[in-house]
Length: 600
Image (cartoon, rainbow, N blue to C red; front, side, top):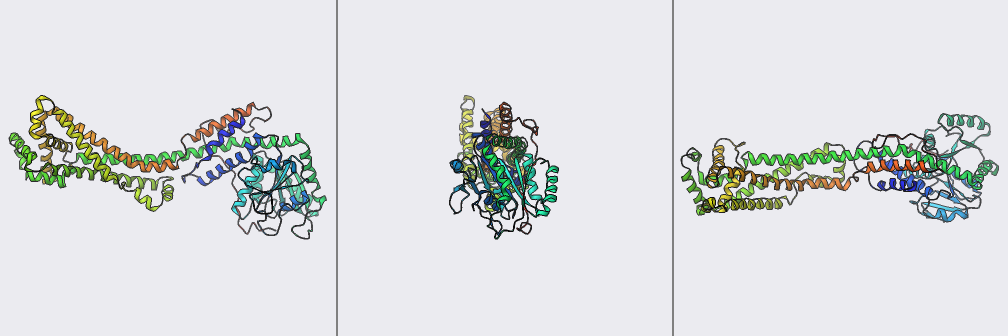
């Protein structure tokens, strides 16, 4: 792998939405992602693919600084559109030598912007002029402090794509904070830079230039080339500056165009600075991605805990005797009548067995008890599922990032998410019937032995199976008064009769096996319910390992730079060792009020 391949490996994970959750400074993280992706696409990758390609100089600056007038004056033609209305530069204009036109008309530079060559609107208008030397192009960018957000963002994008900044300010605006935020970013990224002090009266040139040089020194930009352009009385806004006013700038630019070695030095300076900036920007981005992953893990844990609680609720419902209420209790009450049965149970087991045999051989249809039991288990499952969904929804609403995810889902869908699935009843019915068949198979297999075959036959497989199903719900917690006697009689009665048929140890084994099978079927149902929440997370979640990918790509970039003799090694220390992420500052687009951004 070479340096280009390492940068392409860094670029690949950035094509996804990495910050879907409103966690931490998500808006700043998204902006940092856009800026890094833009610089890779617009500058680093194209420049590395063609290191000797023409140099791109972007003319940038504040509202009313005279950028378009300066470009027109340097070219000697009305290629850009100056004016009194702000913002003026709506469509950036790229002025190139005819020999370089094909290079800039392709997708080599700023591939995300479409091209236009006429007077109509286009994302990037390309104009040819012999006044611009081959090997150099001038790009008139929108205002960095435009009242239009899209213009500010485009200005930042174009400056990030430049090999060289020709930064224009005025005697009235040179100390403003907005331009300095960009100039400091140029320092941090070692971008090649020249500053034009425009529209300054002749008597103020010396003191203002001296003060501007002082500010440049204080901000770490000492040695920056500074040009001054005197105030000129122009007949209208579209007039060009006198040739002698811009001759020093034109001569310097022409010298760059003619000197391939100097162009290469400028390119390598800016390229190295952009690569250096990755040492802080990529770890900061990896930290933010890891924070998102932790947010998703937290939301996933909330769901897992909610549905684990639902399974615990079902376990409690199996053991507390509550299932023996209602219809199941009524079916048994028809047979038992009162709790008197329990008091005679030990001395009259033979008589009880006869009554049970009669119960299952025609005096009372066994189907009624089976259906009542099935309905009770289904209700227990639905209650567990509803409770789990409600807990999961409440947990997400209170968790970092969860509320925003639910907002994106919408109120109606969120409300549906807080209840069991509409088809849970059908699936629960199938699961309970499957369990009942499993219990009957258990009884059938156990009754296949010679010693129990006759006794099982006297009850019938269905009868013995129903007794085993009742034995699964053997505890009496949660019942009171007469219910304890009746429900307790139900479970103990089934236990005693089954012991008489299969023996003590076999009954215990059969009961545990039947209970665990039902529990597993319910666990699967609840897992399917939880999958609704998990599917939402999976649809929004960045691929796992993205933070590690970014870290590994940066390490490879660092290694490849060390092998390149034509590019200096990193001039900034790595922010952190591989795998240890922390927040890092990112360049923000400044925003000013409309009143502050009025032109002169």
